[in-house]
Every structure is written in structure tokens, then in C-alpha cells.
Picture 1 (tube, rainbow, N blue to C red):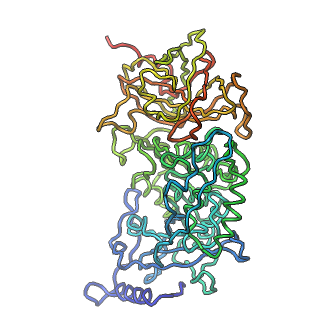
Picture 2 (cartoon, one colour):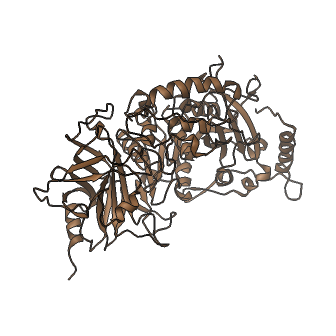
Picture 3 (cartoon, helix red, strand yellow):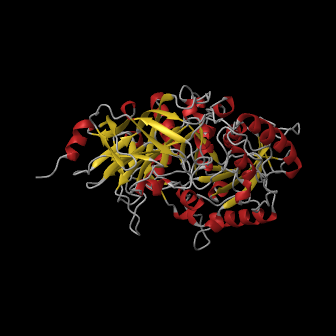
Amino acid sequence: MFHLRFDSLLVVTLLVLAHAFTGATGSRAAEPAVPVFKDGEAQVVKAFEDADYWIRHDLWVETEFDSDGDGKRDRMHVSVTRPRQTESEGLKLPVVYVSSPYFAGTGSKGLQYFWNPRHELGATPPEREHFPAIERTGLRPIISKSHEKDWVPRGYIVVHSSSPGTGLSQGCPTVGGDNESLAPKAVIDWLCGRAHGFTTPDGDQEVVADWCTGKVGMTGTSYNGTIPLAAATTGVEGLEAIIPVAPNTSYYHYYRSNGLIRHPFGFLGEDIDYLYDYIHSGNPDRCDYCDDTVRDKEMAEGFDREHGDYNDFWAGRDYLNDLEPLTAAVLMAHAFNDWNVVPEHSVRIYQALKAKGVPTQVFFHQGGHGGPPPMKMMNRWFTRYLHGIENDVEKDPKAWIVREDAEQTKPTPYDDYPNPAAEPVQFYLTAGAPEQGRLTTAATANQGTESLVDNFSFSGASLAQAEWTDHRLIYVTPPLTKPVHLSGTPSISIKLASNKAAANLSVWLVSLPWTDTKKTKITDNVITRGWADPQNYRSLTESEPLVPGQFYEMAFDLQPDDQVLPAGQQIGLMIFSSDRDFTLRPTPGTELTVDLDATSLSLPIVGGQQAFASALLKEE
């Protein structure tokens, strides 16, 4: 049994015990409260609804690691919110578990704490200023109240924990290191009776989760969505289902792109050591050890802010490499216009899990960062895998996509993602710089080369709208006479030369004419984007300085998408160098020259070549 530690908890528990055994007249016992299901979904149960009667308590779960070097196993701070019936009636329920590094507060957002992106490619960057100590927030025993209103009334226990080195959890934050996978594993082991929980961070009075059925699900958004995947990669028994929303599945793909140093949108100059500082709200007595060991040694020696190459440091923070033990059913959610955690993060994991045979579905919408699946989808997922109700969710369509003008709660079902009817269509470039060239499905020989001059002062949006400029190359299709449905991952094969040893390479796929009005939607202008370092034309793991004037061939993917482009629009391929919202900003003047005859674009179009050709026919 749970050992009470607070007078307030004792009073609440005694009150709910009394309430449970007296009816409205005070003369007879109330009917036992149990979860209720209808149409394959857990229903709100009136007896579970009143938050005043929920039991709340916190504890510390012992892990199997010592990441803060104090000679003792780290303990994670955990809070529990459960219906009173788990105490008064001995009711056992499954758990919805959320873990985060953000619950106890975060660092300042001043620009002075970012890396300065204004420096030359390949050069040693100027030093970055570190955050002052984080002022920890939050009161015990409540770490967070997120997800409680959704799940406790439906017959679940909600559990929260602070990740290592944050809040009252011991250890060091590692931003994707092994301890961030093993910490939630330990909490799940405790929920399932295999690990020890204690009433204090250093004591030996134990807490037992005898109210848990041994079935656990996890969810969360962004970093909080990464942790469920991290936990699942340990193969921990009892973690039956996860719903990661916009998860960061690879810190390399978050801070780099095809060898290029690339920042998440809105956080120009952020890198993994910045995120470490931003979340490090843990024990001040071990702060110096964590800073020295993790930030100033492991990260500083591994993240390679000069070249951007993929290496062992980044491979150790790429969950695609750790999927072998994963058995939990996975419902992933992401947005195609998320330029913070770009959509490839979920697509790459979804494809790998399908190949592995894990029960998997995916929900995509057209918005920005975040956005969970509709409650109905999540409810069916947890009902099936945590309560064990046979609702046939595994037979539902594999992919659910919110169309451009639809409400986010009304996705369209598809057999899979990418759309099984999508086929790659090859496009070729016809000269036209410094104005627009043409983008066609038939190659025109002897197009020669065209050049652009880098200048980070101009945004991608301004370059896409420019009628005449030598700071980008752009190639457009004729106007569409019918809608065209893109579904999948576009890719580009490019042959180019630089007049310097290093250069940024940015590619946007845009929908023209560009619109900028109050009615402009997030899907109206930018279709998708991609970035690469020409120095990595051979390999992601090794940069090779470019010989000025020498041509190099490379191929890389743009970000995945699923979008229906309306009639009247033109598809434009824009090639430029520095993307001021994402890349470093070297001194303007680098010249890139593109061999048009050796450059092509592949677009995944539903219906393939025939559908696109039909979309160009003029209506009679």
C-alpha cells in the first residue's frame, strides 16, 4: 500500500473513504465505480469526474543509472493523480504517463544565449554566453496538471515525471542521451512493480503502485513527445501504447540537415548545448558536474558546429538506431508545416515501425508545431491497448490527414502514407535566370548553367516573390488547370559549383503566385523545404572542402508533405544559398553555379505522370 506522507492527503483520503461508503442519504454504500466503454471508447464516468476527490501524491523512483556522478542511483520525481476509488474501493486502472524537462521551468530566451549565426562557414564560431541559473517553479505534490481532465474521468490514472536533471529529479540532462530513455523506463517499471519508489529523494520509505493494472501509455508534444519514443526503445514491459506528438526523433535532424548546420524555425542560433542550458533546472549541488561532464565535454567534443557532419555523438541521439526492442503500439502525430520539428522526424520512424510490424498509425495536419490527434483517435488507441477492449482500432486506416480547408478534428482517412497511388514524377529545368525558368516533365537539352549570388539579407519569401534577382534561381510549371495531390517525400538531384570552399544550399518548393493577405493560409505559399551542405556530397559523415569552380553532384530529400495544390497555381522550384531563417549567415557574395542539364526534381504525385499531364490540359 501507499504510505501516506502529508496530513492533507490523509484528510482527503479519509473524506473520500467516507464519501464512497455512504450514498446520497448517507445510509447505504454507493455502487462501485468502474470504467465504461461505448463504441470502442472509454466514456466519462461521473464518479471519476470531480477533481476535488482525486488523490494526488508525489514520490521519487530509483533508476538504474548515476548520471550526476554522486555515487548513488538517480531518482526521478514523479507525481500521481488518480480517482479516489483506487484507494476506497481497491480499483486498479491503467496509466497515462507524461514526462518532460519543462515542468519545473526553463532558462531565459534572450538572443545573447544563442550561437551567433553571423560567421563564415567552416570557421570556429564565437563563444556562446550561458544562461544564469534557472529559477525552479512548481509546487509539490503536483508536477503538472496536463492531461488530467481528459483521462482521469475516463478511467485512467495520470502520472507525470520530470526528466533527469530537471525540477526535483536527480541526474544530468543529456538531451537525448541514454538516461533520458532509462528514466521513464524506471517509472514504468515502478508502476508495474519491478522498481522502487520512495517518499523522499534520499530516504528508504517505499511507495508501491498497487493501484496500477500494469498497463501504461505515454503521450506528449515536442520534447514531451520524444520521451515516449525514448522509453519505448528500451522495450520496457508494460508500456503498451504511445502517442508521440511532433516528437524530435533525432537531434541531428533537428539541428543539422544533410551535413548543413540548420536551426529550428524561430530559434536561429539554437544548438544542443543551448537546449541543455535551457532545461537544466535540477539540483544546484550537482550543476557544475553536469555542466563539465555533459555540456562542456561530451557535447562540446561531439556536436561539431564547424562542419555539421553526422558522427557517433549524433548517432547516439537518433532513435531510428534504437527501434529493435520497441513493441508498443504507436500512434504518431505531426504537422506538414512544422518547421521547428520538421515532419521527417515522424515519417522516418513511421516507415521503420511499419517495416518492423509494430501496430502503427499516423495523423498529419496542415498546421505548425504540435497538434495532437482528435480525442476520438487517442481514446480508441488507449482503450484498445491499455484497457484491452477489442474495438478493432488496428483495422482502421493507417493514415489520417487533415485536408487544407478542413477542421483539425476531421481528418480524411487514407490506406497509408504516402498515398499508395502516389508515383514519382521527374521534372527538369529550363533556363530563365535572373527571372523565372521553366519546370517541365520533358528535358530540354543544352540548357547550360545559371548562377546565383548568396545574400542572407533577403528572406526566402522575398526571393520567391522577386520578378528579377541574382540571389536565387527559380523554375516554375505552367498554371495548373486541375488540382494536383502531392503525397510523400520530394527529392532533388543537383550538380553545382561554388566559388568558395564552403556554401549553404537551400531549396524551397513554392506555390505561385505568392499571396500575402489576411486570408493567406499556412499551406498557400511554401509547399516544402530542404537544405544541404555541398561539402557532404559524398557522405553525411565527412565533409570535403569544395574546389572553387569544380562541379559536384549530390542528391537529397526535401521535407515530406501531403498537399492538394489548387487549380490556378504554379509549382516553383527555388534554389538559393543562405536561408536567413534557418542557416548560418556568412558574408554575402558566395556564387553558386548550377548545371541545369544535370539537375532534376522528383515529386510524389497521386496518379503519377498521367495525373500531372491532365492537370496541365486547358479546359475547352
